[in-house]
Length: 106
Image 1 (cartoon, rainbow, N blue to C red):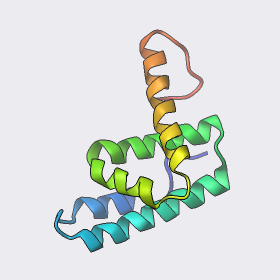
Image 2: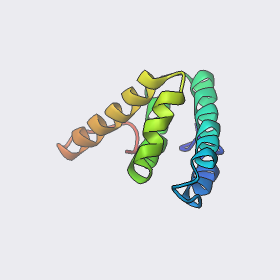
Image 3: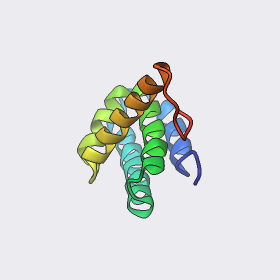
């Protein structure tokens, strides 16, 4: 399994180049990102490795584009999976800081 969702990084770079006042352009790119991620979830499921890959992508979006992440939660068919993935990544990072061993890289 890849450590990244194909196509999302390109769309995020397009999002970086858009001025904040261009709402319709931003919304169109966010819709594309949500479609790609939702199709990836449908294809790969919600196993632990899939959740971590998804969480890394969502964490990158939420750190750099907080409002975009909030809009994505409204657009997606899987808002609970998005939130579960972010929470799982935060738990895994905390577990690793406390000396725990994980079978995957966070």
